Length: 390
Ligand code: NAD
Ligand code: MG
Image 1 (cartoon, rainbow, N blue to C red):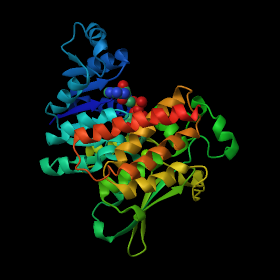
Image 2 (cartoon, rainbow, N blue to C red):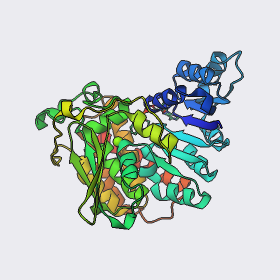
Image 3 (tube, rainbow, N blue to C red):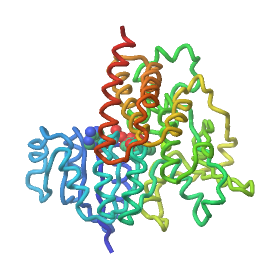
Image 4 (cartoon, rainbow, N blue to C red):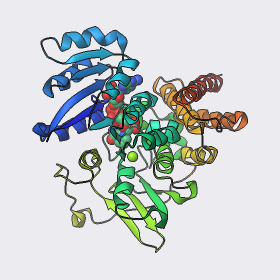
């Protein structure tokens, strides 16, 4: 039986890896929607290869180029934010949510409202709107399967276990591009240097977030929202080799570790084949050759994001949206050369001070209320960045 699948963010790193897995057995799938941003050539070529029902670019002004690129094929074309959400409402058995940033939230929510199984790579949607996303899935009985490698690892380690018997989870972190830099050099780091990951090939934004550990900070919120663990049950452990992705500790003292190569095709394939398993073209680890695995505690002075996120988790509600919005704006500022690498945490820290003052953690959560918290956080982040430059 063929399964129908859609891929949101098909032109990105996760999107390309997802298509690669589907390419192994094209007869088994029917591709419904593929979406992308500005890389029309890549989107059109994937839509043609997989004979997608529809290709959608996020940008209205690129509709004509997409139409031209797909001329002579049967692929429908559309553009814009609403078109993305409409594409998420098209019936499919499985949807990959791999847009980067807050923009992944509306189509992901729409897919869940429909009851569609959502493979969730877009961590920003859980960070900004975890309670809303989980509640939407519960109401329509839709399944969310985590794709972030750490959360896929926890999900796998929990197979057949009672959540009540979990004492703690340990999420591992490589430490990113600057793990061995002297602390005083960090303020001079360039976007290019930050975008070079020691272990994982990924999109530019998540790679820079790995260097600052904002990525790991977001993963703590993801673990809290998705699995329902409390803040003090979730720990971070530095692990240079990125071969153990997470560990789950049970009340009898046992630890279940998930071990595998640093290759997202494993977590994507697991989400695609869940609850079964299928052959995946990933490296088989030779542990004797690897010889040793290293662990250490992260230094808080090097990774302020790990400290800040604890306040966000304690506040709950819309604090996650404010955190994500200010982080995304600060990352844009760093990429544009407006602020330094180390200023990103300062911008987010100011937003967290604001959250505790205006207490908007408490309001009922809707897509509109989350959008508003995101918008306000971005405006305030611009002000903080302007001030930092004064
Ligand atoms: P990427 O930058 O390589 O790709 C992002 C995709 O989103 C592209 O298809 C791009 O066209 C699309 N996009 C960008 N802005 C958009 C917008 N405003 N509206 C609609 N589409 C837009 O990113 P990636 O590394 O593939 O990451 C995708 C998501 O998966 C992120 O949320 C990331 O945190 C998460 N994730 C990625 C990895 C990884 O290995 N790359 C691992 C874990 C989690
Ligand atoms: Mg991860």
